[in-house]
Length: 103
Image (cartoon, rainbow, N blue to C red):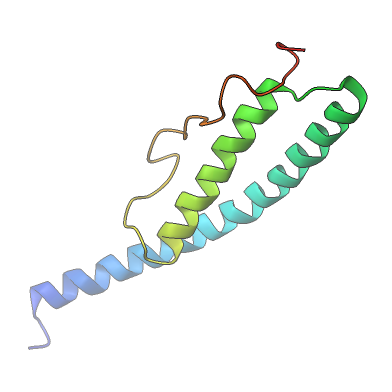
């Protein structure tokens, strides 16, 4: 029973999952800092320019989705690894949001 190939493959899979979990947890920390930077810049842009920056709006939405996908992977809610193993999430922000282009 000790040399059961299915059990050994499962253990190797868990070790690999642990490695990916550690890497994605580190990525989460970096993404959190990046999110705070986007929040600050978007807020300042809105205060001083009177409109949202469309590029930051789209990137922020993609970053939020990336964090959600990462959380799903880290909590075992999903086996799908997020970016860079999947495409970067597309923005879901409606085009009619008041941005520099519509101001």
